[in-house]
Amino acid sequence: MPWRNTSDPYLIWISEIMLQQTRVDQALPYYERFTKRYPDAASLASSGLDEVLRLWEGLGYYSRARNMHKAAKQIVDEHDGSFPTDYQDVISLRGVGPYTAAAVMSIAFNYPAPVVDGNVMRVISRLYHIEDDIRLQSTRDRIEILAADLLDRARPGTFNQAVMELGATICTPRSPACHDCPLQNSCQAYHRNRTGDIPYKSPAKKRPHHHIAVGVIRDANNRMLISRRPENAMLGGLWEFPGGKQEPGESLRETVKRELNEELGVRVMVEKKPFEVIRHAYSHFTITLHAFFAELDGLSENPEARNGEPVKWVAPGELVRFAFPKANRKITEKLVSYRAK
DNA sequence: AAAACGGGGCG
DNA sequence: CGCCCAGTTTT
Image (cartoon, rainbow, N blue to C red; front, side, top):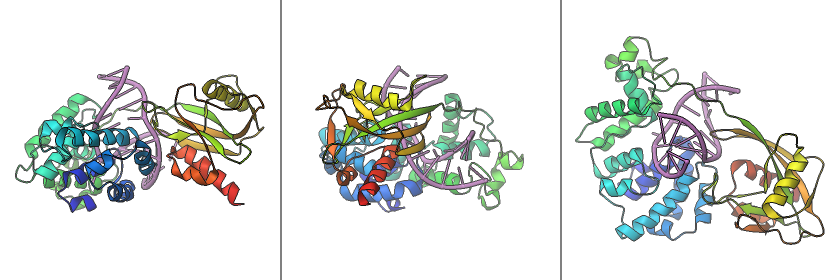
């Protein structure tokens, strides 16, 4: 992994933010593009958020990108552009919590802080046969104490990465490769044949499902209307086709009419059937997204967002310049393919 | 302490 | 389809 071939705390920080809740294989191409465009904190800090989000598009948890952008400004403003070397300064950076602070400090500066992520919790709970619910903070505290005790204080960064890699490659959630594990002999869960049910995690609530209807409004030049989401909202700062959640007793066409009237103050005609239907899963709910073509009625001239966010008329070929959430990006791809025909 | 917050991969 | 992932912030 490229971030292993550097001692630059900035690059290690970028990699660790990208790896939050994200697999190495998924983050890798983003890391390459991102660090090429932003080789240091100053270049990131002086960029516009729109471009940062465009580079982040598809990686998810977009608050990471917004927070990282703010943190880069912190590094420039408060640390003269060079990445802080003090633990308290590092964890004060926006978007840097206990995990990322420990990871960056140990890997970049040899600082003896144990990393406790999902991998470490799995490895240690099996090693010590910890049956407690790993959703509980008390369990995580207990595991952190054990991790601190095990930590190789001469090489904390190497140790932390080694435990995480063991969890990612050998001590996996399902069907761990215990026959290849260097810790097999000292693993209590292995000896008790309990690797299948340790770590224990209490059941998650299941995710509700929503139907979302959006309208693609086109003008005489085939430009399309998009709007930007507020920065403090879900998918904040990304662009989308205006629309919203279907209410009980409402047809999807009525949803489009109501949402566009509420959000943009316009009245529209909506085609009878959607030109695209997309299913998508978010972390805490799932949606079916129905995309309709819509047309402004004669009286509605200049749509403006009621929430004060910008809206834009965009030609199909320009849609690629804007950051869209995954489900909306599928709509833009469909629209561009129409144009190609 | 619990909820909010994306998207992809896997069995 | 449910679970998991190199977590942090907000409530």
